[in-house]
Length: 69
Image (cartoon, rainbow, N blue to C red; front, top):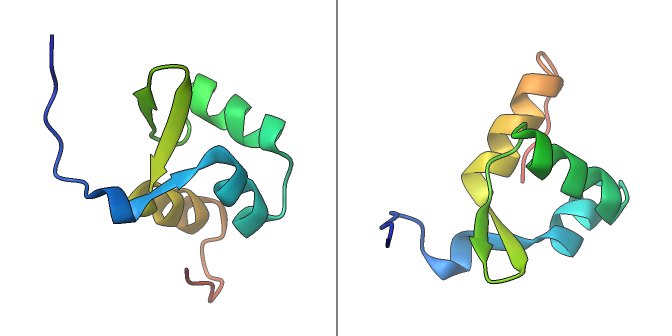
């Protein structure tokens, strides 16, 4: 089964990149991904997180703050 998305590869971050941006551990990002709190795309054994998913997560947790990626 294949699934098409509208996300270009330049808009995808690794778990390590998301962790560095958010200043949390990679394990925290993996937990968010596993819980479905932050959207991700799985490639084999690794995950990629769309830039839009990172923005949505930050916006949902920091309502009222002025933070951008």
